Image (cartoon, rainbow over all chains, first blue to last red):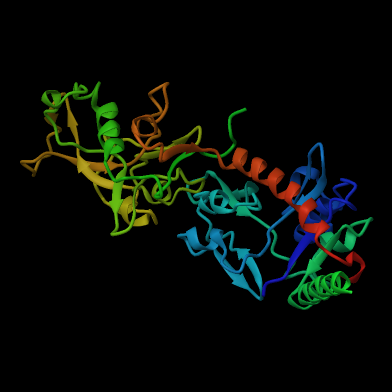
Length: 176
Length: 193
Protein backbone atom coordinates (compact mmCIF):
# COMPACT_ATOMS: atom_id res chain seq x y z
CA UNK A 1 0.00 0.00 0.00
CA UNK A 2 1.19 3.52 -0.77
CA UNK A 3 1.54 5.73 2.27
CA UNK A 4 0.00 9.18 2.38
CA UNK A 5 -0.10 12.25 4.57
CA UNK A 6 -3.43 13.04 6.17
CA UNK A 7 -4.44 16.22 7.93
CA UNK A 8 -6.75 16.48 10.94
CA UNK A 9 -9.06 19.51 10.86
CA UNK A 10 -9.54 19.22 14.66
CA UNK A 11 -5.83 19.98 15.15
CA UNK A 12 -5.04 22.21 12.15
CA UNK A 13 -5.01 25.90 13.00
CA UNK A 14 -4.61 26.98 9.37
CA UNK A 15 -1.16 28.52 9.79
CA UNK A 16 0.10 27.23 6.41
CA UNK A 17 3.51 26.29 7.83
CA UNK A 18 3.12 22.98 5.97
CA UNK A 19 2.86 24.82 2.65
CA UNK A 20 6.02 26.79 3.35
CA UNK A 21 7.83 23.67 4.57
CA UNK A 22 6.84 21.95 1.35
CA UNK A 23 8.33 24.70 -0.80
CA UNK A 24 11.52 24.77 1.28
CA UNK A 25 11.84 21.00 0.96
CA UNK A 26 11.47 21.03 -2.81
CA UNK A 27 13.23 24.31 -3.67
CA UNK A 28 15.98 24.13 -1.05
CA UNK A 29 17.20 26.48 1.66
CA UNK A 30 18.57 28.77 -1.03
CA UNK A 31 15.15 30.42 -1.18
CA UNK A 32 16.01 32.35 1.98
CA UNK A 33 19.07 33.88 0.36
CA UNK A 34 17.84 34.79 -3.12
CA UNK A 35 15.38 37.21 -4.70
CA UNK A 36 11.79 36.11 -3.90
CA UNK A 37 11.14 36.12 -7.65
CA UNK A 38 14.07 33.77 -8.16
CA UNK A 39 12.26 30.60 -7.13
CA UNK A 40 8.85 29.04 -7.56
CA UNK A 41 6.42 29.14 -4.66
CA UNK A 42 4.34 26.14 -5.58
CA UNK A 43 3.37 24.18 -2.46
CA UNK A 44 2.23 20.66 -3.24
CA UNK A 45 -0.44 20.72 -0.59
CA UNK A 46 -3.05 23.38 -0.02
CA UNK A 47 -4.49 24.52 3.29
CA UNK A 48 -8.22 24.73 2.67
CA UNK A 49 -10.32 26.91 4.94
CA UNK A 50 -14.09 26.71 4.94
CA UNK A 51 -16.67 27.80 7.47
CA UNK A 52 -16.36 24.39 9.14
CA UNK A 53 -12.77 23.28 8.77
CA UNK A 54 -9.20 24.27 8.07
CA UNK A 55 -6.96 21.48 6.91
CA UNK A 56 -4.32 20.84 4.25
CA UNK A 57 -5.46 18.78 1.26
CA UNK A 58 -2.95 16.73 -0.66
CA UNK A 59 -2.44 13.63 -2.77
CA UNK A 60 -3.70 10.34 -1.32
CA UNK A 61 -1.24 8.36 -3.46
CA UNK A 62 -4.11 6.20 -4.70
CA UNK A 63 -3.48 2.54 -5.38
CA UNK A 64 -5.13 2.92 -8.82
CA UNK A 65 -4.34 6.57 -9.51
CA UNK A 66 -6.79 8.32 -11.84
CA UNK A 67 -4.12 10.93 -12.68
CA UNK A 68 -1.69 8.24 -13.79
CA UNK A 69 -4.35 6.43 -15.82
CA UNK A 70 -5.14 9.46 -17.95
CA UNK A 71 -1.57 10.71 -18.47
CA UNK A 72 -0.68 10.13 -22.10
CA UNK A 73 2.84 11.51 -21.93
CA UNK A 74 4.17 9.03 -19.39
CA UNK A 75 4.91 11.80 -16.90
CA UNK A 76 3.18 10.19 -13.91
CA UNK A 77 4.57 7.08 -12.29
CA UNK A 78 4.69 5.40 -8.93
CA UNK A 79 8.18 5.63 -7.45
CA UNK A 80 8.77 3.81 -4.14
CA UNK A 81 5.10 4.11 -3.23
CA UNK A 82 4.83 7.78 -4.20
CA UNK A 83 2.76 8.80 -7.23
CA UNK A 84 5.17 11.26 -8.81
CA UNK A 85 5.24 13.66 -11.76
CA UNK A 86 8.21 13.96 -14.07
CA UNK A 87 8.11 17.65 -14.95
CA UNK A 88 10.34 17.19 -17.97
CA UNK A 89 7.77 14.88 -19.57
CA UNK A 90 4.63 16.88 -18.64
CA UNK A 91 3.02 18.56 -21.64
CA UNK A 92 0.53 20.50 -19.54
CA UNK A 93 -2.56 18.81 -20.95
CA UNK A 94 -4.32 19.16 -17.58
CA UNK A 95 -5.94 15.73 -17.84
CA UNK A 96 -4.52 14.62 -14.48
CA UNK A 97 -5.81 17.76 -12.75
CA UNK A 98 -9.23 17.04 -14.21
CA UNK A 99 -9.08 13.38 -13.20
CA UNK A 100 -8.10 13.80 -9.53
CA UNK A 101 -11.25 13.80 -7.40
CA UNK A 102 -9.52 15.59 -4.52
CA UNK A 103 -8.10 18.50 -6.47
CA UNK A 104 -4.65 17.36 -5.36
CA UNK A 105 -3.05 18.11 -8.72
CA UNK A 106 -2.49 21.77 -9.51
CA UNK A 107 -1.27 23.28 -12.75
CA UNK A 108 1.63 25.68 -12.18
CA UNK A 109 3.81 27.81 -14.41
CA UNK A 110 7.53 27.45 -13.77
CA UNK A 111 9.41 30.71 -13.54
CA UNK A 112 12.54 30.85 -15.64
CA UNK A 113 11.86 27.55 -17.40
CA UNK A 114 10.91 27.90 -21.06
CA UNK A 115 9.63 25.45 -23.64
CA UNK A 116 11.59 24.98 -26.85
CA UNK A 117 9.32 27.53 -28.55
CA UNK A 118 10.01 30.17 -25.89
CA UNK A 119 6.68 29.90 -24.05
CA UNK A 120 6.78 29.52 -20.27
CA UNK A 121 6.84 25.91 -19.14
CA UNK A 122 3.84 24.77 -17.14
CA UNK A 123 3.53 21.50 -15.30
CA UNK A 124 1.19 19.49 -13.15
CA UNK A 125 2.28 19.72 -9.52
CA UNK A 126 1.48 17.43 -6.62
CA UNK A 127 2.79 15.85 -3.43
CA UNK A 128 5.58 13.33 -3.96
CA UNK A 129 5.79 12.37 -0.27
CA UNK A 130 9.18 14.12 -0.19
CA UNK A 131 10.63 10.97 -1.71
CA UNK A 132 13.94 12.77 -2.30
CA UNK A 133 13.98 14.53 1.07
CA UNK A 134 15.87 12.92 3.97
CA UNK A 135 13.51 12.36 6.88
CA UNK A 136 10.39 11.97 4.76
CA UNK A 137 7.38 14.28 4.38
CA UNK A 138 8.37 17.77 5.50
CA UNK A 139 4.82 19.06 6.05
CA UNK A 140 4.19 16.78 8.99
CA UNK A 141 7.59 17.54 10.54
CA UNK A 142 7.05 21.31 10.50
CA UNK A 143 3.40 21.33 11.65
CA UNK A 144 3.33 23.09 15.05
CA UNK A 145 0.15 21.32 16.17
CA UNK A 146 1.01 17.85 14.87
CA UNK A 147 -2.10 17.95 12.72
CA UNK A 148 -0.53 15.86 9.96
CA UNK A 149 0.41 12.23 10.06
CA UNK A 150 1.85 9.72 7.67
CA UNK A 151 -0.59 6.90 7.16
CA UNK A 152 1.28 3.71 6.31
CA UNK A 153 0.23 0.15 5.70
CA UNK A 154 1.40 -0.71 9.23
CA UNK A 155 -0.29 2.03 11.22
CA UNK A 156 -3.43 1.91 9.11
CA UNK A 157 -3.63 -1.83 9.75
CA UNK A 158 -3.24 -1.18 13.46
CA UNK A 159 -5.95 1.49 13.42
CA UNK A 160 -8.35 -0.84 11.68
CA UNK A 161 -7.49 -3.65 14.08
CA UNK A 162 -8.34 -1.36 17.01
CA UNK A 163 -11.61 -0.37 15.37
CA UNK A 164 -12.57 -4.02 14.95
CA UNK A 165 -11.66 -4.74 18.58
CA UNK A 166 -13.76 -1.73 19.59
CA UNK A 167 -16.71 -3.01 17.56
CA UNK A 168 -16.35 -6.46 19.13
CA UNK A 169 -16.20 -4.98 22.65
CA UNK A 170 -19.29 -2.95 21.89
CA UNK A 171 -21.13 -6.06 20.75
CA UNK A 172 -20.03 -7.97 23.87
CA UNK A 173 -21.20 -5.19 26.17
CA UNK A 174 -24.63 -5.44 24.58
CA UNK A 175 -24.82 -9.16 25.29
CA UNK A 176 -23.99 -9.00 28.98
CA UNK B 1 -11.33 35.93 -13.14
CA UNK B 2 -10.17 34.10 -16.25
CA UNK B 3 -8.17 30.96 -15.59
CA UNK B 4 -4.41 31.22 -15.88
CA UNK B 5 -4.52 27.88 -17.64
CA UNK B 6 -6.24 26.89 -20.84
CA UNK B 7 -9.82 25.74 -20.75
CA UNK B 8 -10.84 22.70 -22.76
CA UNK B 9 -13.96 20.77 -23.63
CA UNK B 10 -14.19 17.41 -21.94
CA UNK B 11 -16.67 14.66 -22.57
CA UNK B 12 -18.41 12.16 -20.33
CA UNK B 13 -18.40 8.78 -22.10
CA UNK B 14 -21.17 7.70 -19.74
CA UNK B 15 -23.50 10.27 -21.28
CA UNK B 16 -22.34 10.29 -24.91
CA UNK B 17 -24.60 8.33 -27.24
CA UNK B 18 -22.27 8.73 -30.22
CA UNK B 19 -24.81 10.76 -32.20
CA UNK B 20 -22.19 13.10 -33.67
CA UNK B 21 -24.33 16.20 -33.16
CA UNK B 22 -21.16 17.80 -31.75
CA UNK B 23 -19.25 17.05 -34.93
CA UNK B 24 -21.94 18.62 -37.11
CA UNK B 25 -22.26 21.66 -34.87
CA UNK B 26 -18.48 22.09 -34.93
CA UNK B 27 -18.36 21.86 -38.71
CA UNK B 28 -21.27 24.21 -39.17
CA UNK B 29 -19.99 26.87 -36.80
CA UNK B 30 -16.54 26.92 -38.38
CA UNK B 31 -17.83 27.07 -41.94
CA UNK B 32 -20.75 29.43 -41.66
CA UNK B 33 -18.62 32.41 -42.65
CA UNK B 34 -15.90 30.72 -44.64
CA UNK B 35 -18.11 28.47 -46.76
CA UNK B 36 -21.62 29.78 -46.09
CA UNK B 37 -22.69 26.52 -44.50
CA UNK B 38 -26.10 26.96 -42.89
CA UNK B 39 -28.09 24.84 -40.51
CA UNK B 40 -29.78 22.73 -43.20
CA UNK B 41 -28.49 19.93 -45.41
CA UNK B 42 -28.93 21.79 -48.70
CA UNK B 43 -26.46 24.46 -47.69
CA UNK B 44 -23.55 22.04 -47.29
CA UNK B 45 -21.42 22.17 -50.44
CA UNK B 46 -18.04 21.34 -48.90
CA UNK B 47 -16.66 18.25 -47.16
CA UNK B 48 -17.96 17.86 -43.59
CA UNK B 49 -14.81 18.47 -41.57
CA UNK B 50 -15.33 18.76 -37.80
CA UNK B 51 -12.48 19.56 -35.44
CA UNK B 52 -13.43 16.96 -32.85
CA UNK B 53 -13.73 13.26 -33.45
CA UNK B 54 -16.44 11.05 -32.02
CA UNK B 55 -14.61 7.85 -31.19
CA UNK B 56 -16.58 4.67 -30.71
CA UNK B 57 -15.75 1.46 -28.90
CA UNK B 58 -18.05 -1.48 -28.37
CA UNK B 59 -19.09 -0.26 -24.94
CA UNK B 60 -18.55 3.49 -25.04
CA UNK B 61 -18.20 6.54 -27.19
CA UNK B 62 -17.04 10.10 -26.79
CA UNK B 63 -15.64 12.90 -28.90
CA UNK B 64 -11.87 13.33 -28.68
CA UNK B 65 -10.62 16.85 -28.95
CA UNK B 66 -7.77 19.18 -28.09
CA UNK B 67 -6.77 19.75 -24.45
CA UNK B 68 -5.11 23.04 -25.31
CA UNK B 69 -1.94 21.86 -23.56
CA UNK B 70 0.13 24.40 -21.70
CA UNK B 71 3.33 23.09 -23.32
CA UNK B 72 1.59 22.07 -26.52
CA UNK B 73 3.70 19.47 -28.37
CA UNK B 74 1.92 20.28 -31.66
CA UNK B 75 2.99 23.91 -31.37
CA UNK B 76 6.50 22.97 -30.31
CA UNK B 77 7.11 20.89 -33.43
CA UNK B 78 5.50 23.20 -36.01
CA UNK B 79 8.29 24.61 -38.16
CA UNK B 80 5.95 26.98 -40.03
CA UNK B 81 4.73 28.75 -36.89
CA UNK B 82 1.25 27.78 -38.08
CA UNK B 83 0.24 26.83 -34.53
CA UNK B 84 -0.06 29.56 -31.94
CA UNK B 85 -1.34 29.77 -28.40
CA UNK B 86 -3.15 32.89 -27.28
CA UNK B 87 -5.28 33.31 -24.15
CA UNK B 88 -4.94 29.60 -23.48
CA UNK B 89 -6.27 28.54 -26.89
CA UNK B 90 -4.06 26.56 -29.26
CA UNK B 91 -4.97 27.52 -32.83
CA UNK B 92 -3.86 26.25 -36.25
CA UNK B 93 -3.54 28.76 -39.07
CA UNK B 94 -4.49 26.70 -42.12
CA UNK B 95 -3.01 29.32 -44.43
CA UNK B 96 0.46 28.77 -42.97
CA UNK B 97 0.17 24.96 -42.70
CA UNK B 98 2.22 23.05 -45.27
CA UNK B 99 0.79 19.68 -44.30
CA UNK B 100 3.97 18.22 -42.80
CA UNK B 101 1.91 16.18 -40.31
CA UNK B 102 4.40 16.63 -37.45
CA UNK B 103 1.64 18.01 -35.21
CA UNK B 104 -0.57 14.99 -35.91
CA UNK B 105 2.27 12.73 -34.82
CA UNK B 106 3.21 14.84 -31.78
CA UNK B 107 -0.26 15.03 -30.23
CA UNK B 108 -0.71 12.17 -27.75
CA UNK B 109 -4.50 12.35 -27.97
CA UNK B 110 -5.04 12.17 -31.73
CA UNK B 111 -6.71 15.56 -31.53
CA UNK B 112 -5.23 16.86 -34.79
CA UNK B 113 -6.37 15.74 -38.24
CA UNK B 114 -5.34 16.50 -41.78
CA UNK B 115 -8.46 17.83 -43.50
CA UNK B 116 -9.43 19.41 -46.83
CA UNK B 117 -9.14 23.20 -46.73
CA UNK B 118 -12.05 24.92 -48.49
CA UNK B 119 -12.73 28.64 -48.77
CA UNK B 120 -15.82 30.16 -50.39
CA UNK B 121 -17.13 26.72 -51.22
CA UNK B 122 -14.07 25.72 -53.23
CA UNK B 123 -10.90 23.80 -52.42
CA UNK B 124 -7.87 25.99 -51.89
CA UNK B 125 -5.68 25.10 -54.86
CA UNK B 126 -2.40 23.32 -54.46
CA UNK B 127 0.06 23.03 -57.32
CA UNK B 128 0.37 19.28 -57.65
CA UNK B 129 -3.05 18.21 -56.41
CA UNK B 130 -6.40 18.04 -58.17
CA UNK B 131 -8.14 17.75 -54.84
CA UNK B 132 -6.68 20.92 -53.38
CA UNK B 133 -4.86 21.72 -50.19
CA UNK B 134 -5.14 19.76 -46.98
CA UNK B 135 -4.20 21.30 -43.66
CA UNK B 136 -3.95 20.40 -39.98
CA UNK B 137 -7.23 20.96 -38.13
CA UNK B 138 -8.06 20.87 -34.46
CA UNK B 139 -10.44 22.34 -31.90
CA UNK B 140 -10.05 26.09 -31.42
CA UNK B 141 -12.65 26.30 -28.62
CA UNK B 142 -14.82 28.33 -31.05
CA UNK B 143 -12.78 31.37 -29.99
CA UNK B 144 -14.53 33.49 -32.61
CA UNK B 145 -17.96 32.65 -31.22
CA UNK B 146 -19.04 34.64 -28.18
CA UNK B 147 -21.54 31.92 -27.27
CA UNK B 148 -18.67 29.48 -26.62
CA UNK B 149 -17.97 26.01 -28.02
CA UNK B 150 -20.68 24.90 -30.46
CA UNK B 151 -20.21 21.22 -29.51
CA UNK B 152 -21.13 21.88 -25.87
CA UNK B 153 -24.31 23.67 -26.91
CA UNK B 154 -25.28 21.01 -29.47
CA UNK B 155 -24.95 17.89 -27.31
CA UNK B 156 -28.45 16.54 -26.59
CA UNK B 157 -27.16 14.51 -23.63
CA UNK B 158 -25.18 17.26 -21.94
CA UNK B 159 -22.13 15.03 -22.20
CA UNK B 160 -19.78 17.90 -22.99
CA UNK B 161 -18.67 20.75 -20.83
CA UNK B 162 -16.04 23.43 -20.82
CA UNK B 163 -13.55 22.51 -18.09
CA UNK B 164 -11.57 24.96 -15.98
CA UNK B 165 -9.25 22.69 -14.00
CA UNK B 166 -8.18 25.38 -11.57
CA UNK B 167 -11.74 26.31 -10.59
CA UNK B 168 -12.61 22.61 -10.35
CA UNK B 169 -9.55 21.97 -8.19
CA UNK B 170 -10.64 24.55 -5.63
CA UNK B 171 -14.12 23.05 -5.48
CA UNK B 172 -12.70 19.52 -5.09
CA UNK B 173 -10.20 20.74 -2.46
CA UNK B 174 -13.05 22.05 -0.33
CA UNK B 175 -14.96 18.77 -0.58
CA UNK B 176 -11.79 16.86 0.35
CA UNK B 177 -11.19 19.13 3.36
CA UNK B 178 -14.75 18.70 4.60
CA UNK B 179 -14.38 14.94 4.18
CA UNK B 180 -11.26 14.94 6.36
CA UNK B 181 -13.39 16.01 9.32
CA UNK B 182 -15.44 12.83 8.88
CA UNK B 183 -12.39 10.68 8.18
CA UNK B 184 -10.58 11.83 11.31
CA UNK B 185 -13.65 11.34 13.49
CA UNK B 186 -13.40 7.66 12.56
CA UNK B 187 -9.91 7.19 13.97
CA UNK B 188 -10.32 5.62 17.44
CA UNK B 189 -6.96 6.53 18.91
CA UNK B 190 -5.42 9.58 17.31
CA UNK B 191 -2.39 9.39 19.58
CA UNK B 192 -1.44 6.01 18.18
CA UNK B 193 -0.63 7.30 14.71
